[in-house]
Figure 1 (cartoon, rainbow, N blue to C red):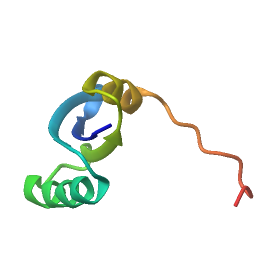
Figure 2 (cartoon, rainbow, N blue to C red; figure 1 turned 180 degrees about the vertical axis):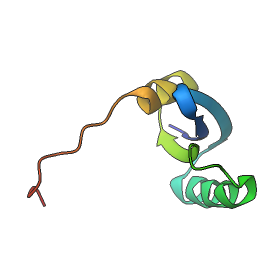
Figure 3 (cartoon, rainbow, N blue to C red; figure 1 turned 90 degrees about the vertical axis):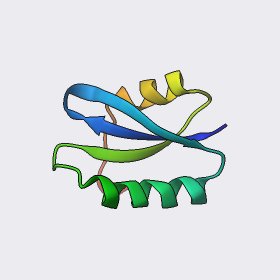
Figure 4 (tube, rainbow, N blue to C red; figure 1 turned 180 degrees about the horizontal axis):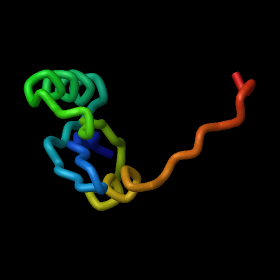
Length: 72
């Protein structure tokens, strides 16, 4: 499964920036893009591991809830 790099804009607007086969490359590319794009505070660049672009977008739109405190 590939790693997808997305630019996340307000109101869950997603823009696929890249697709790579391994995490070290994807992480390096995402860090490079964060510096190059000079993003406003309302936007992010994220790496997501998924079967395809559709699943990646679905995962990025899901609300994640933090676990209870003290679960270290």
